Length: 157
Length: 172
Image (tube, each protein chain N blue to C red):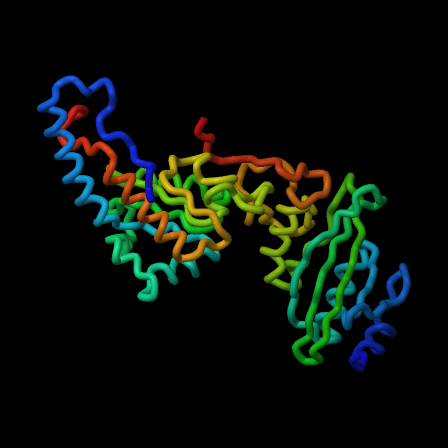
């Protein structure tokens, strides 16, 4: 059974790419990059989505645009989740940062930047968080060699 | 049962019989003392820690082998037990802990991740701690059974008992 909030959300948020659909109990919207910040602000202020759960990315290698940045939100009042997907091209993989709206986005965007090389405009601190300084490349991209190591300590011969 | 012993007297030093007899008896005595006082430093990083707790606790009880008193300073420890996955980011820490330990020191690779990286063949995990520090005993298993750990400790004891123990200079 769909939560009653979903009907109102589907009418309130209509992206250019088409209306939202429900997938596995989560309402999914596919957005254009410039629609992201207004939509998130609307979710937070008008619909009570007070928890920013996660941001990650999908590397659809071979497709154009290549990357898909995925945000998840949760409403503790309505107990429902919403997923926002934004496609970004390989040449300029950047989306707007959600740090001005959710403070918790800072670390998650750092991790996403580590693993996929997505640039979050407005996040001032994109230093490595799980990787280390000097790591070249982004290991969860599909074109990163599977067993490529970058050891910090020289190996014993 | 345990045939893997290190020869006590190298061939180059088998000249003076009386001296070698004395040296051998000294090595046996010190080896006997050292093999029952292995103070481990648990470098515990991952899920093998559960098995480490099981093997340390009373049902299996590594104290029977003198290897139960964990020293949480590497400077007081004899045995570095690397329990769990070591990542590339953590390898400098492991190396620093190893270098802080005083001689004599031994290293145990506990579990398959410490032994070879296990199934973590990727950007993050070190493919075996012997890429960074020398290892005396490898205990495979994911996680190893407590019996395997005890077997490893006993083999390490055999190794310690059969080794040379230089206490004065490089001959004695």
